[in-house]
Length: 228
Image 1 (tube, rainbow, N blue to C red):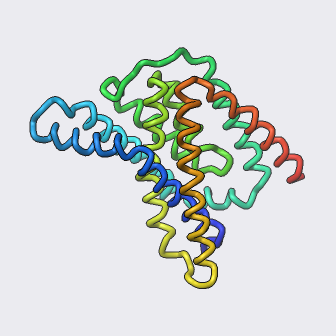
Image 2 (cartoon, rainbow, N blue to C red):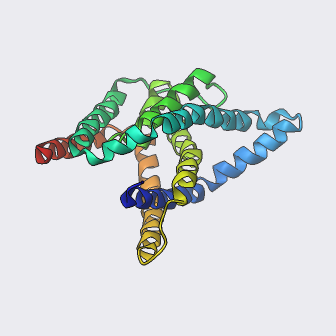
């Protein structure tokens, strides 16, 4: 049986998903229209079609890891010390982005290996304490994607991942007195998500992602100490 907190977390992620859809609404419409144009035999939408293809490809390892290791991932939520150590890992991953030269890859320059590696990073981020956006954006930068594309691809990639998780867990959410609190949480998640997306994308474009590493290290060490 799934813990109620996990179901609540899914609804919070759903609020974040809505924020992603709203924030990237122009990019999403361009991808869909560009793909449709490309399917009709015109080259104008080729880059948008390739971006959609890489999102699908990257979603495969994430989905497989989520299905195959679901129970193990969920068991980690009750281990605060493990979460603390994973926050230290996230901090190190973010800090290492400072060693990478600025990439220039566009969606047209990406390859299947790039997509799969980023998809694996997203799958690993199911582990509590590993930031999904931090892991995927950092990996995108390691793959020499441009800063803007690394950030955009990370959040566009979250759409199928969050949808899949929501479909798996939504039927297990119990209705009752707590449903109002759940939807209030989702609304707050949506509002905070929009603000956070604007802030984070600005930070990514400026190459200041390493600033988050200090926060992750501080919280991670605090969790490890308190869990003893």
